[in-house]
Image 1 (tube, rainbow, N blue to C red):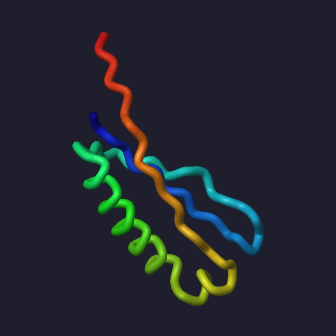
Image 2: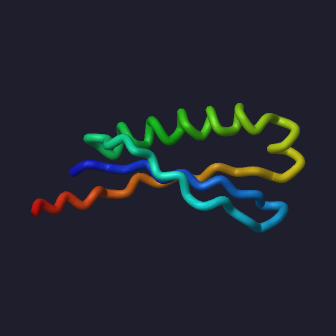
Length: 72
């Protein structure tokens, strides 16, 4: 089974989320996908910056979805 990483950035202050960011990478295991999710979350928070994260109560959520492998 292969997995796709889906990240969601939300402002808890505004009760609003951006549209999901779907990774174009495929991961062979859920473990690999989760590891990447934590790394990407840190990168996103670093890019937004401490002031914005604290001001808007930003969170990053993510999930690893099983990729459908249908052959034609």
